[in-house]
Image (cartoon, rainbow, N blue to C red; front, side):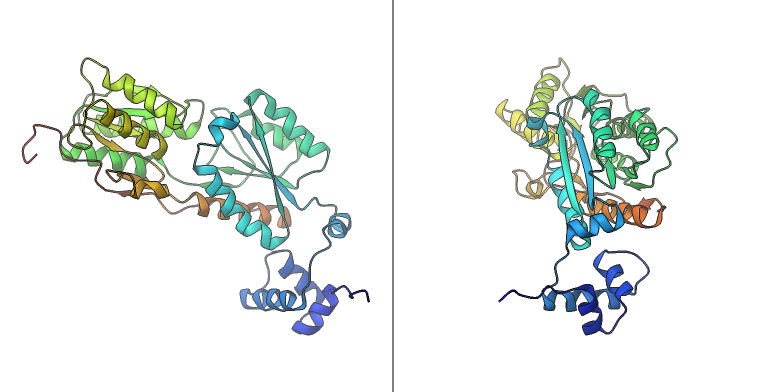
Length: 345
């Protein structure tokens, strides 16, 4: 016997609401009270309702998918803890709205214009997440030309018609980490940054530089790396090989910081007795390495959630406001201390 397919009308009748209310709830659209939305979802789940995605797509001329194009070498992406958490956050919202996430990894940034054009012309996605913003980013104008809705992670430095989901990762984060090291008495503070074509790398470098200048401390050396463990290790070897090595290093992410601690200890420099280290992101391992890592806490998962909600709102209504995420917080652990030989050491 063929099992009868449960329809939206069936769910509406059981839930005691209109079919349009069921549609709003199942598609995650705004305009419905949260209690009503949850009631409809509970009833639909009890009745075993599942969406006919092909029918939905044809009915409303949508792909019910959002795109995320990452122009990074796959081996670099695999070692970056940010994106798995960001994607998990986005999926936690999209899956409830019947949307899929289409991920495409490119080896070279020069390939991304063609990739965005394919997504738009083939109608494979209804919008995209624009990450790793670059200075003068040409992708903003391209997506405007393609009329492809987008949400940017932080604001672009070029005019943009798209909503931005923003994290102030400079002042409350890197500034606080640098000021923490200054308060401990460090005056030779280096910085290991990510690729300088990324706006967030430059923001963090500039925040470190400004904090030193505000304290009247000479600027330490900067090494540009790639956010990977191997890159952080190489940068640390370079810094510790200087004639006058730093007593503290501010890293652009936790992965580079943890690799840097391993290199320092391999060279016979105890952390934090001889070298203080700070990271950025507060990844799960930061609290379990030895010594535990002083770092800046952010939430890529929450960033992914808010980016997904904002893109859904933009596609549904044609507009969406910018979103300011909760400010990062410095988490002081065991990888920082007063410089060797200073009072109270």
